[in-house]
Image 1 (tube, one colour):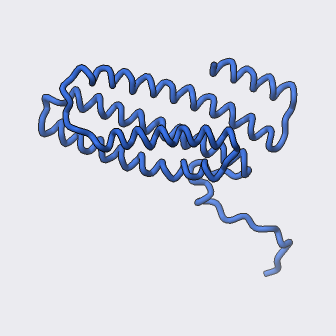
Image 2: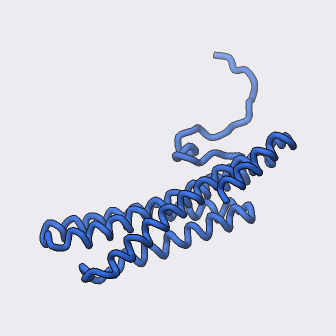
Image 3: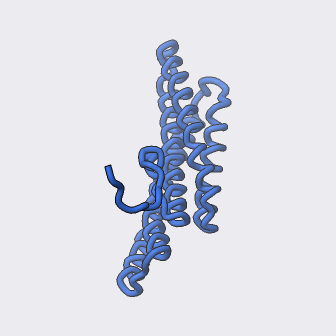
Length: 179
């Protein structure tokens, strides 16, 4: 599907020559198409680790991993919904959630590294859980990329890589100034 969508976008660009909002939308769709394909790859990695882990003795009850999965799933759903409805407010809420995922990932990995040090017999299980956590974090990052594209389409404003924090506020040109 990724290839079909990419080809359709190239045809659209070549044949229709879109401008302004339409061009931003089409370029965003091309990037989002790639992000969704990569999300699928991460989902496969999570499923493989989950299947492997299911056959092992659990290392400990987890609260943070299900929370991380829930927040990541909501981010993906909201970023796609924001794209469909050109809802930059919803997209911006996804951007905020990324910090929560980063914090959960750091916490989970830290706990699992400590567990591996304390009980080396659990290294294999812990590594599978770290892989799941890392893949969830990547899905959240890709969902954030989608949300950033939505803001760009809807507002013609770049928020990628915290660009809006780094750039000075937009002001009207008041004309030449004298010193």
